[in-house]
Length: 108
Image 1 (tube, one colour):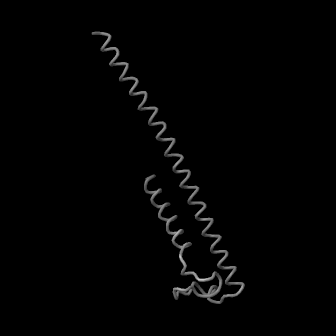
Image 2 (cartoon, one colour; image 1 turned 90 degrees about the vertical axis):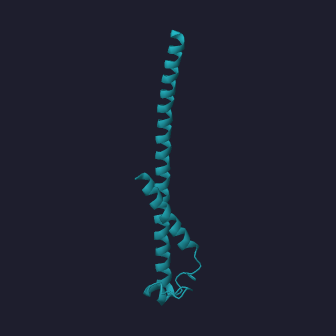
Image 3 (cartoon, helix red, strand yellow; image 1 turned 180 degrees about the vertical axis):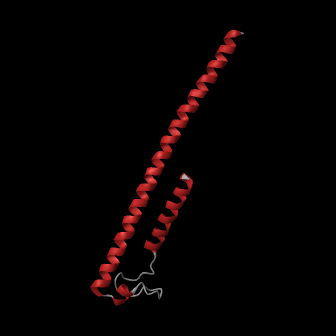
């Protein structure tokens, strides 16, 4: 489940990076993008309303990306904590087995 969430968050993060890095947008708020896509009626209209819509859209995606990165950081922190606990548990097992070996060697 955790692996699935990580994969999903990573996919979303990459998708937003691709979208932001794309030069298909043209100048934000100046009508249709370079790729021939409309970008919606507000963007097609251009002007101040188009610019405002573009700014709001960019703000929305930056916020979503920020949330995804925070989620990813939290996930990694949980994974690190889990692995630390697992190391402690395994170290106790190793010590227990070493004690058994010492006892067997002492009994000989």
